[in-house]
Length: 293
Ligand SMILES: Cc1cc2nc3c(=O)[nH]c(=O)nc-3n(C[C@H](O)[C@H](O)[C@H](O)COP(=O)(O)O)c2cc1C
Ligand code: SF4
Image: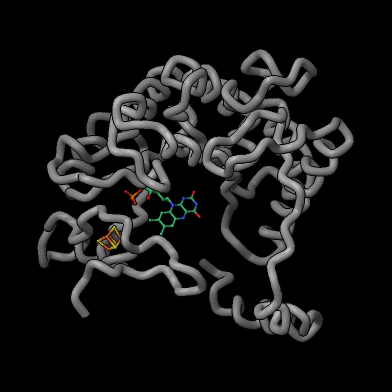
């Protein structure tokens, strides 16, 4: 990544211009009013957000497009639009959280319209050769939420919009408020990071969504979720059910894992035990808390 050598410089220059960011850390956090596509009660945060009006949606589209342009200007090789896990763009995609009856709600096309408009405005700014990819939920794990059939329609739309690759994830944060029976697996704080992955069969828990999409579109698919064994990954890639894989927790525990797998020293299963003890606690940095130092 060509930007990394000068990231500290970017941060220092920001701090020089805005010294208040350093002073503000001891001050109470300012909460903004939560907003969403529709005022649907959120069981996790125990509150109902305010529904956005059209002018606000337009401002948000501009802000995303400008954000993507800044990522390019900062020197990154590409950008991923986050439309998964319950964040704003996924709450537009999901029929569970999007009850709008205007051009941003209803049909699959309408629920992905905000994303299409962000893409179009961003593309004009960054040109044709800057990779813009997207991550979305192939299953929300919530009643009336996205499941494989609807996810396939959404994915086809994302491909039509023009994204350079699509990462298939899943789980809205609110899903943790349900029981195991409704969820289909043990509810955890971030349902995209499933725990209790003890065998190869339990790895690749978002594979069904990736597979369904691979049958329908040509856009490269990136699979994430519980991948730990080299041979399982090889099997998935060779079968053509995904084009790339994505790793999170295994790299928190073993940042050099890909190099290890590339070397002759072995193709051992990642050491990560999928316990989620690495989730940030307060201001403490993310780290593997299961590993004995
Ligand atoms: C500590 C931690 C932080 C995470 N932060 C993010 C995040 O900021 N954005 C995101 O899309 N996913 C985030 N995730 C989810 C991972 O990107 C990934 O989708 C999930 O953990 C499943 O992949 P894995 O089994 O390889 O960890 C986070 C996961 C962990 C454990
Ligand atoms: S704490 Fe360590 S072992 Fe547990 S999930 Fe995180 S990286 Fe893996």
